Length: 82
Image (tube, rainbow, N blue to C red; front, side, top):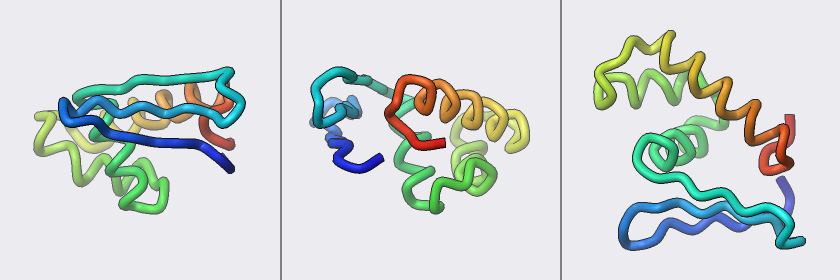
């Protein structure tokens, strides 16, 4: 999304905010890790899941489904473009 500001604070909390100030999303723990993995893997949920699955003790396919659902939620509120 154009103009989206993303910041991770010292506590590991990721904050995403739109330039309009209308929407602000906080993510910590797995949410922050998913965002970072997605950014590292070109927004490919499958690749992000392969990176994160061993750390989360989840199957990559199951985690990829969760990541896709989360991306859908973020798209629905305008933080990600679908």
